[in-house]
Image 1 (cartoon, rainbow, N blue to C red):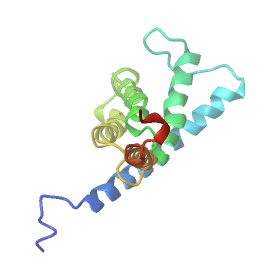
Image 2: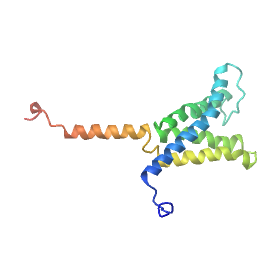
Image 3: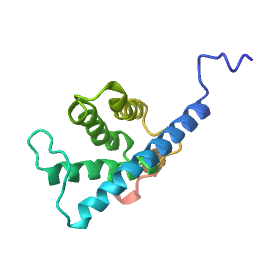
Image 4: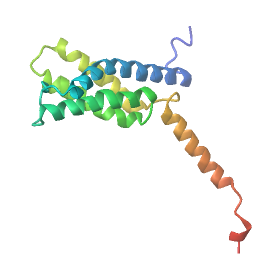
Length: 156
């Protein structure tokens, strides 16, 4: 009972929650991005909303970049904080521009995605990510370089 009511989450539980959030949100976003990628690669005329003066093709290309490529980075936990920035922009544009005149219920999915991306921006990928593995490896290499004795030829 004491553990359930604890206000200090265990590090393992937090890292597991970040892993689940990253994987879950990335897979869900890929279900939106992959069909857009198909439209982009089809060669057919693009019927996609043009936003902020951009052409429909450019708007679609940027949405595909965010929803597919950045979601794949997010799935792996690679450059997590950088990957969520285009995703956050895409969801903000969806909520505030594309669905500006729509009722809240239509905007809500974009806002929910945006909320999860904001959490990942602040928290990072967690321990179960490529970001963590790369950071750990870099720190070990730096530590090993500091501990290496200097060659006798460099001592005068």
